[in-house]
Length: 278
Image (cartoon, rainbow, N blue to C red; front, top):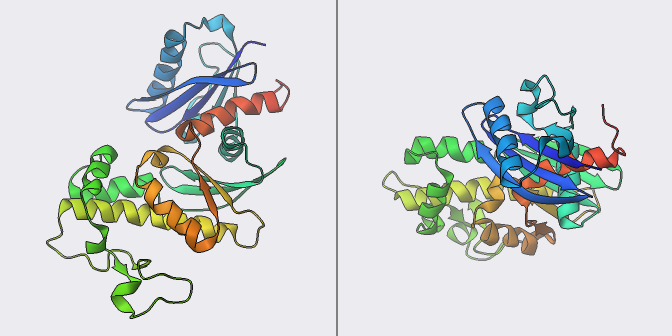
């Protein structure tokens, strides 16, 4: 069997990985002004960087919102498409070795996929994610650069922005310690520093995703959340998600290649169907 290429096509960002003998290798990420340019740029760069000849590629599997813009085979190689939620689940399961699990895809918004053996189901989503963080950062910090926002947030103090249980109660509430968040952004003042605002924005997005993940697990026996997508690279994840683990008895996992799980899952979908995909 030749190489199967999995490609997660976003509107401006594309992630790509090659699968040979069931093993993914050397995932990369590229950006461009539109999905077609991003896709073909990523494909060409991946072949070049890994010294792969076009004739070695057996199949291309596309997923992601930008895949709909690609109407033909990529560079003449047989090309198929994989449902994004299936790709999320297959890639997250491969990278985490967890089953069952709820896959939390932290993209522009956030989706939740229940993965239990062959039963893979989209169970919901919220319109809060990386797009929210970028948009609010442009409004409040005059930048949409998430790396810059994250760097600012490291110097900020979120207690200057959020109202805590300890601010409104003389003693802990049932199940909630004094340092738990009572209300996001409720303490923000008009003269708040950029650093504090950045901390508040990241905290708001990640706490909302964490809370929604816990709610998505209710009524199931699953306590393992596999977090994937670009937002998993935020260092603040290591501080915020463990709080939810302590409060609610769930477990948040961020795999090594969390940002590439969807591309990995797309490639795995080809092998899942025995190399026969229409």
